[in-house]
Length: 495
Image (tube, one colour):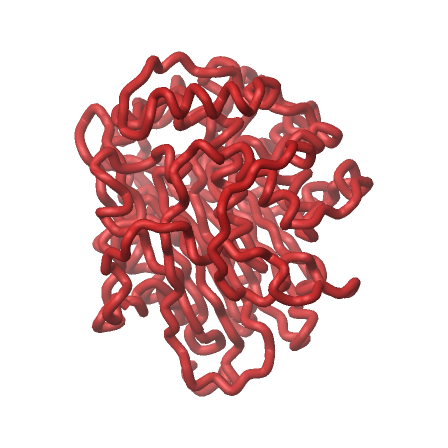
């Protein structure tokens, strides 16, 4: 992200080499080398509570789970729990759908012991552990993505026959296994939901949406240079459990992730067994492929609970800028809510990083907005967009989304005192070039058709700590964003 990103990969455009619109031919194309196939405030928002177990980590059994309901569609009453020891079984069972990463073959106790020996905030040897090998299906998906149009539909990305043959799993069991792996790590921090709409008369369940750049494993270990984060804290065996624990804590109905490079061997096999339909769209030329022992390309992934929504249409978008197809992608899916029968569109994206690429991001944002206008029939269908935009609120691409004819608003602005200010940060890290504290991640929504009922508060500076992110406490350099949405009863009133 921004100025602190690692150097450009071989063959990647730089701000100096990027063509201007006037210098581009009418039908410019980018030829990729064959090697790329190898691989509220409101009084409490930013106040610092005492460090404790996350209140959102419920027992996941607060309400009975009927045969017709998803195991995650439960009463969301936060009940603190302790990390207890249980024999690992489900975390390893994902290997039946795809090979596990190399880290998973190391004993859990060995990983915990070494992490405890180093301790949070203490630098250690930065020898990366093996991240395993990718599956042939992943490379098949990558090859298809390279040949895709800017807005092409690929039904094959929606079908996951391997994991559909596996039995459903109880989220309580998966949570217990994650906690067993993490028992020697510090406890998760308290993050509370801020209620934003208290006059809602809707009897329908809210739609919980989670946005998160989870940090690609290959980038975290091989390229991002988090100089204050011990390498032990980045071990995939434990870091994946922190990621899963966060997801299980907030129980999203829809999950939007960026920098996913362990889709086929971790997230798809596990989340599909929790009742999610899963879609992955890799970057055509992922920087992960430059890292030795990588797990394949990273990309965007979108997950939704199949018993809450029905897929109407799915579109994979390779973003363009200045008439060029770029390395950034998006997924847009039109869903029908089973409870209300209403349609809405959910999109996930990850725009170009680094300072000097502001015009490029702006062009990518314009392309994404145009695609979404077509998909939503000019705002007739309500829209939610999640993403790491790699852009501060002062950038042009942010203004384009704010002023779009789609009538979008940024959900996390509602947590500020005036309702007009973004959080002070969504990512905070230390690299060799210095400390980086930025607001780059957003959840946009159709403000005429949707209400934000509540939003999850951010970690405070005290909780994040002097060594910043990622850490033994938190698995990514970006914070997760979570919002509860409901349909506006009079969607035409604000158009």
